[in-house]
Length: 331
Image 1: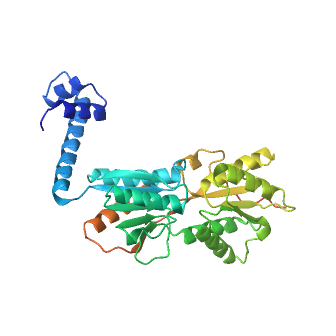
Image 2 (image 1 turned 60 degrees about the horizontal axis):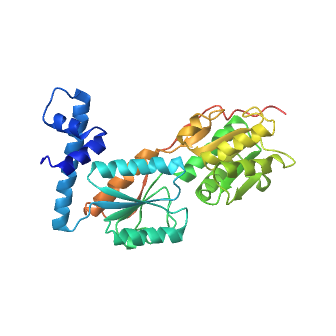
């Protein structure tokens, strides 16, 4: 590697050391701690690999860049998926352009236009609203299931997972079960949860179902407050994501009730904070980082012509049984 000043500055910045430390580490000086020297050498190696990729790109016309679309920067569920995508792409010499769409199909289209202008080689789209992307360039969708056979999708079985949660509550003895959803993540989970209840001869009571546009913890809080005002409150509530469930926990606490003694609350997604709320949340755990890595891997294979687009990869989910759900008290 040529030790020009620009390169040394880049290495120093990425390794978080002084430029003189980089010079000493690369020359084998014993004055540099072994772990620091190893970190510097690893960054230097990575930069050289990246330069080789870029030089090849000049000749081949490749940009070694992928566009990644997520709908919400504040939601750790999407952040964990995105982390898996970026880790895999960067490990394989690709740069990432990231766009946050705020669940808007129009904003998604604008980012796709931007990605085209930047000559990205493909797109990984998380929870997409705009399904025309695969007709424009190689693309993989994560978590969303657009109605198009040519689209490659990575997800869990949302229907089956929601049905499993319904069965879990029914097996505990719950019969009056509420449902809290938002319009972004509800359809497959609503259908699956309803089907799971039907296996126990139960139906999802419309009077115990609240679905509207409001999202995140505030949405869960307000929807739970509505359920608590019903003439007969549920003994358990299923929330279609963990953020709604966390808001529901707060509403129940403020109403002077206890979870799970008075009402059980369960969620979906398995975000990291779900294990640390009080009480810890029973939830469906999605393999978020693995979903991101798999999506990125499939996209690179498609870009390289190793596989045809289309098809669905279904990854396994798990049910984390924690302290927010228990059998109902006898009445």
